[in-house]
Length: 319
Image (cartoon, rainbow, N blue to C red; front, side, top):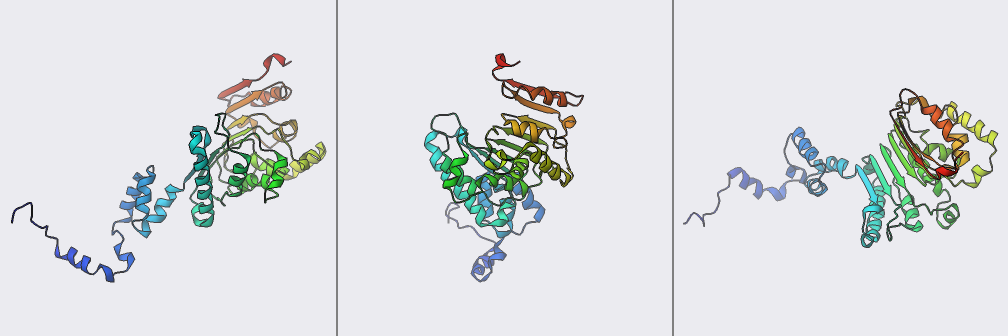
């Protein structure tokens, strides 16, 4: 018999294992590797989703370890998607959120949630209906470290009446309250329906917050509009009096367009933000906010400030 046609000879132990494989339980087929070894293998593959998906079906003992990486980052970025792909990706994203909601143990693996739904690219703007569905599908995350939520600018309070949840504006506030380990919050055009939701998105409940970016908080709910200035100050005093002590220092803050009530009565309320600890300040300076900008600058111009970025809008109209 030629070498090319010779059948390979297998070790007797391997032949016996193949013969008896049908009578073995499924756990005996799992790889018999030291825990440290397959941990190193999976850690090495953490940035390769296809490889992690393959590893997750190799054995039960590998599945949970792979899921910690597969679900660590949840991301939707409409800015980089071709218009033809956006509709399909939106549906898949919602399906993924709903799938995570169906298995509560998976939600604990997610540490970063990025939703960039606003885009100036023609054809890439996510509709209000799609955005509401995304917000209503958010799972009960409990260990988020980074939250980026840039919703379309055309979401208005009047449209929330069309959807099942009467407190749709509170979903962002509830999400932040459930995740006290948040280190970075970046919100543009966020919805909120109460003062408690408002202070939540400004980091009051985030004990480890280091970076805060707030932009385009120009719309107010009816509840906040009806409150007097004294009522807001009294409520803020009670809220800060019962706030848990921070375990990290807020060092970076980016301030976009804010409603005057939010800027003057909440953001600048004594004790809400330790301005002397801010190292990085990024601020929009426009005609509408020019009265408050000098006060903010005065609070932040100290020896610890390392970077200052000012964006001037309509600067010729400023006093």
